[in-house]
Each structure stands twice: as structure tokens, then as C-alpha cells.
Length: 263
Length: 248
Image (tube, rainbow over all chains, first blue to last red; front, side):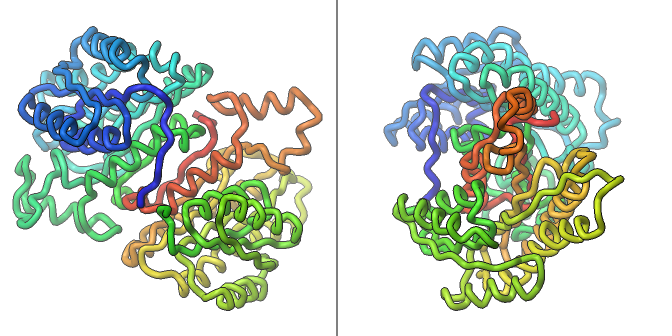
């Protein structure tokens, strides 16, 4: 039997909630009995499948298409969720564009700007859209970031740079919004068998984003717990814990869910 | 049924406010608790009563953990109780507030013995009785992450526990034993009784946290429960600050 988390009243909104990491987070909140809203950017089919899967299980779930580069769109969605479910207790950021892994200086300025616009500025739009509702519910904000700001991962600089900015914003919000009872935390993902780090279950020679056999071997060898990538459920459990009342005294923190890769 | 059914948890310093609530939360989730205490037997018995009140099971063992003989005595008691440990919570510790100008050698030694050497020796003994897949949670302190001029010896001893946590996480990963730490800020226990008479002092303590209040023993215990449970299976070598957002 797993740990039972106590949640405040209100819906959970997961930005990027149909993706590799986000999908596991969406499923976990929905199966824990929360009203869940999630957004997707390009993967309409996958989002519809996820919504259908969870509704078949009797979960309360609604999907929205969203480009979080739009300053207004996150707010529209969160307002709509509040109209539907009454309040929002937790907002999770689990979005992020797929990057070409390469030395940071090989990226042109447009590519760097796209990363900042999609992640850091996108997260800022989410914060602005969510904050009044989070103050009302004394809720919490959780950003999925990366271990790569604690141990440099070669060729992953685009993602790490933007996510460092997100962690900084999270700390700022933790201090400035603490007086309203709002908590804000980051969860730094290690190497997972989902999303951009996905490893085919039987043959570890391929990855969805074609990062390559050697990379997977190297990454796995760096992970003290079992020399394996993490599993989506192992990430989702920690997100649920941070969102729950059990973590009501944790704010402004980054917790690395990484099997020890950053050590 | 709970997530810690069939597990045995050793909690050191379980007669104090935080240790007691850790014992209660672990027991409530199904663990059988071995509650260690050093000198306050009555308080330890209250811990057992609190565990029983939530339908749990706890035994108490007395030991002075500031020296190796006391640690061996504790584990002789553990062996009489079956000799198995799945979860170890290194919670016992002592405070120290002297500045560098006046701290005595024996006060430095005491910090080293009680806050540094004792958890190391307890962990060493526990590991010979722990099955693969166990969990160790070290209770450290925010003091171990920040400047604390009077009380530096305490802060140093807690910083050592953070270092211990990191090394053990990597060393014990091969056995799938996870090692993490919880670093509390000021918590509403007997340890802050010295401040209670002054509203200003209490306000100052509370305002250290972004959330504007003191921690409670349950704030800490809930995090320990998470780290002891399978829900945190992918977490190791982490230091979770349980401070309401201090030093941000």
C-alpha cells in the first residue's frame, strides 16, 4: 500500500501534463482523487488518449491546448479551471521543448531565445495567471526542473540555463508569497525512462529522442541507485508529496529526484 | 494496512518532541518502532503511549549514545527485540550555544561525540542488521547549512551529518539503501522554551520562515515518513530543508 496524501480542496493544473514526465504526474493526481486539468502543446492525440484513459477509470480530468509563450493563455486556462471546479490548489509546471543536445555555443541566439521564451517566460506567465487563485486556496506551485544545475550534463546547457531561471523564480515566489500561505518548490529530475530520456524497455540501444546508446549507458552508470533510469511513478510520488499537506512546511526548496546522479 | 507494514524502525532520541512524533507517524503507517531514549524514561514512556494511541506498537530502549559502549548496549537491546531494522532515523542530538571565545574543550568534544560520532556508530551497527532496500533518515538542522556564530560547534556537527548523508547515499546505493536528511529550522518543542517568555523573540523565530510560523514536530515527522516509505524510492543523498522557507 502506498502513502496516502492529504490535499487541500481544489483542482490541480499541470502544464505540459500529457508529456513524458507530465503524463505520470497527471495520472497520479487524477488517481489520487483530485480534479485535474492538464495542458498540451502539440501532442493532441496523446492528450486525448490520456484524457480518455483517465475518464475510463472514473477520474475527473480536463485537457486544454496551450502555448505558454502566450502571456494570456495560462491565465485563461486557470480561470476556466476555477470556474469549473471552484478553486485551484496546485499548479505544476512540467513543460519544456525538446532540445537538440549539443554544446551550448552551437546554439544560435534564436534557439536560445526560444528556450527562454518557452520555459522561463512561459513559467512566468503561468505564475502570473495562477497567483491570485493560489493565494485564495493557500496552495502551492511546483516546477519540474533538472539535476543539470547541480552537476553539469554535457550538451544539455539550453535546458539547464532556462531551468536555473525557473528555480530562481520559485525561490522568489516562496519568499514573497509565503505571507499568503503560498508554497513554491522545484523538483529537479534526474535521468528518467520518460520524455527526452526515454529508453526502450527491452532494447536499451535506442531512445525516443535518439540520444544514443552510449549516452544511455553512460547516464545509467552514473546513477548510484541501481544503475538505471528513474521511473515516471517515482517522479510523480514526489510531486504529490510536495503538493500535499504533508509537505506544508516545505517551501523554496529544490528536491532532486535523481537516484543520486547529482552526488 | 500501511506503507510500512512489517517494517521495523529504530528512532533515536524518541523521548523528545520531534522524535516522538516521528515514532507516531512511522507506527501509524505500520512500522514497529524501537524508541531509543537517553535519560528521560518518563518521556519515552509517553512516546510509547502516543504510538499505542494510534494503534501502533513500540518498545523503548535506554542507552547513552555518546560512546561506543552505549551504542553496543542499544544494539544488544535491538537484538533482543529480533535484531532486525528496516528504517533508521538518526534523530538524537544535543544543542550548544557557546561562542568561539568561551567554548570549552569538553563542550566541543560533546558536540563531536553526541551529534557526529554517535549517528555514525549507530548507523554502522544498524547496517549489519538492515536488509537491502532499507532507508536511513538523518535529522540534521538548518544550522548545518548556515552561519550560526554562537552555536558554531553545533552547526559544525550538523554540517558533518550532511556530509555523512551524501557519502552514505553513494556507498549504500548498491544495497538499495537510501540515505537522506531532514534539516529543520526552529521547531515548536521544549528546546525553544528559553524564548517563550519574550514575544519579540518568538516573533523573530517565526519570521525566519517565509511561511511566518515555527515548525511543528509533525512538519518534520511527515517528511521523515515520506523518506522512509517506498514513495521516495528514487530519492537518495537529499537534504530536505523543513524550515518554512528559511535562508532563501
